[in-house]
Length: 176
Image (tube, rainbow, N blue to C red; front, side):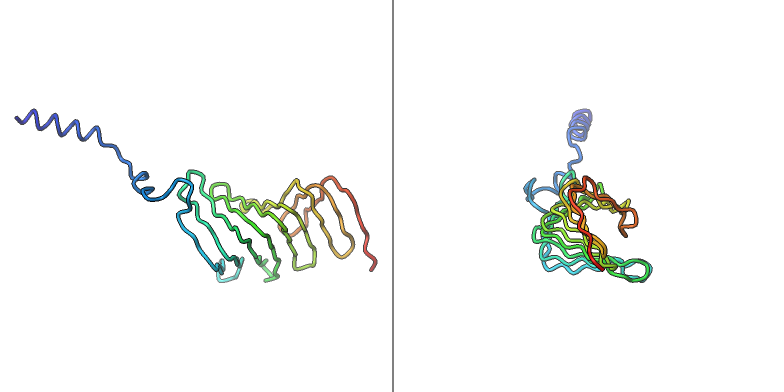
């Protein structure tokens, strides 16, 4: 009898596997967000200094997927502050943030305006949060106090000190 109980117990022990992640997904469709946030007003500080301020109407949280992301279907307004508390602004009609790659994909009517008055307009712009780098291969319009440059692609650090317009299609020089 003891052998029979031992065999049943051992069989049950090895047949049952840990499905904790599967249990967590019960009731959540594989393609549905795990959460929805509305009227977002998020401020990020570091060492007591405001670094970023994000405003958005709606965010869908897909952190339950194997490749987690957050989707902002109603667009975003993002204010970025440098060490001198100077503000630059990024606006787009749609955005998606990929958690594993630290990449932000901004789409549709993307406008980035720096505190110096430089302006980048694009239909799509990527921001690598880890490297603090902006890039796209889509058509752009970049303007500063001296000129307006149109091109197909853009590559730059966050403060535009190392920026370049790729495949320049036109330049308009502004009169002082």
